[in-house]
Length: 140
Image (cartoon, rainbow, N blue to C red; front, side):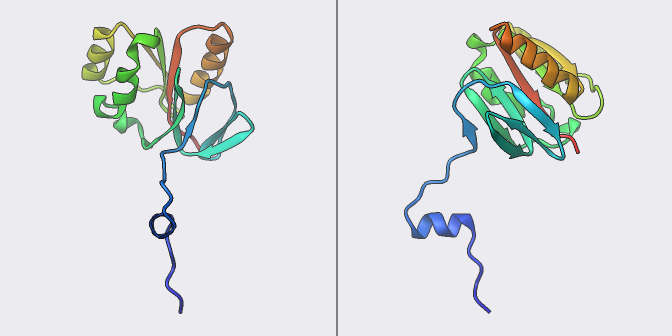
């Protein structure tokens, strides 16, 4: 039986560089559910970060992962963010106290809500050209 190659194997053998999934710009979220999101005529499986610099794949899957170490990219772009919507999946979950303190320190107002509400609110605020970002867990 032939040995199965991974994307990493292919990239090494063909001199390709694998970059993190990233859409370079802001776009409204067209749909969510089934474990992912649709935006800009594309689909993405998994959670996402919607930042002023673009939409990124986010390796966070459960509300327990909503801790400061997983928000580094948001903190790096803090000067361009006024409001952060945190879509915590099917249910509303409180924000970790250390995370909330770190966000306050850089003048970001954080609003936790279910992912559906976060998608709708993000689209409205984006349409109003507000300095909004979103961290959204994928829902099934």
